[in-house]
Image (cartoon, rainbow, N blue to C red; front, side, top):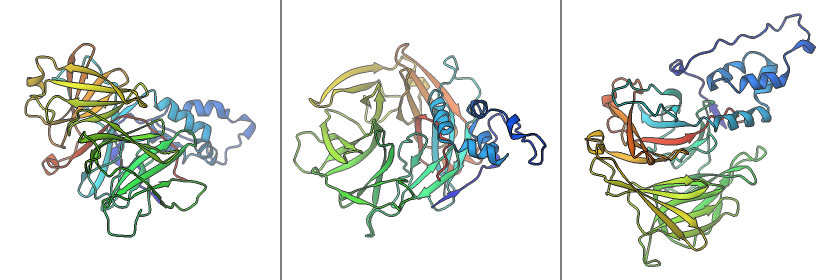
Amino acid sequence: MFGILGFSAAMGKRQKQQVTGRPSNSPRENSNEMPIDLLIDIFTRLPVEDVARCRCVSKLWSSILRRRDFTQLFLKISSTRPRILFTFLYNGRRIFYSTPQDLDPDRNNNSSPIIPYYQMHFPKGLASSDKVCPPILGLICNKSKKPLICNPSTGEYMSLPKARNENYEMSPFFGYDPIDKLFKVLCLSDDFVFQVSTLGTSGEEMTWRKVECPVRHLPLSAEICIDGVLYYLAKVMGNISTLPFMVVCFDFRLERFKFLDLVLITVSSALINYNGKLGVLSASSYRVDYNTEAIELRVLEDADEVKWSKTVYKFPYYWKDLAAKTYLHIVGMTTTGEIVLSTCYVHNPFYIFYYNTVKNSVVRVRIDFGIKPLRALNCSKISTFLNYVENVKLMD
């Protein structure tokens, strides 16, 4: 159901570690093998590309690296060292790169560019859409009529069956139910029919089931899944509300919709997880550029009574010079309270901006993907995601 892309030679951006295994004909007895707990502790310290190599050393190592306790421990440790994930289309292929999220806060604008780590790519022709869903526990779903779920850490992907046989465009949303520990996909067709499916349940074939939605709406680009609830911005269709926009909530466990009024958003708005609560970051201008004076944060303090708090962060005086001739989008907010912005398209130079809301300071970081020529990518949209975690669990 899925294909393994393998690891490209271009992946060698991070420091390689030489891993050698004992020959299978070694006279050493199994009783003298290194304890499994110690092996697991060592494996969790390795980069993902070395974990992949270790699977090929021996059957014992391969079985250990497939154990549930190891993959869960690796994921837990990975969550303490989140990464930024970049993905875009290049020559008909969707490519994934990542870099550590916690960059040097003292980095200055004249420092050398960061070279991100190449993760994987889809084979040519499999990813026609330029949009993807935010990653969840290391997995990511592309927004196309026939969605693909992939794991950039292992280089695997799996194709989902079409939600409908008719010739309708589909818009998938990716989510996770932490109670039942299930990944799910919600699909909306352009005739406003919702369907949902569950991934990987005991090897059973995926099936789609309809979900009733009482409010006709048009989803916008911003979305996030928090504690099993999918949130996305939408435009209200018809005259059912006095406000033109709203936040749609879909509970993946109950498979039910809920709708929240939102006073003001812009096309550049982003949804974030703000200490377990839904947050909305919006620019003071129609789009984010050097003319943007501030970013507004609204946090959903009470979902039942739909109460929002509001905080306004004003850019420092040098923002105009730092962001000159650059169109940006709001990526999100780190756990340390930094708002991250990124260039919208892949071109040279490509920048991400760290806005420290406590110090009221902005740091610009240049990213070099190492693709030549970049001229062909100048019109390619790029999706940038925070808090990406590496997941070494294979798609068995």
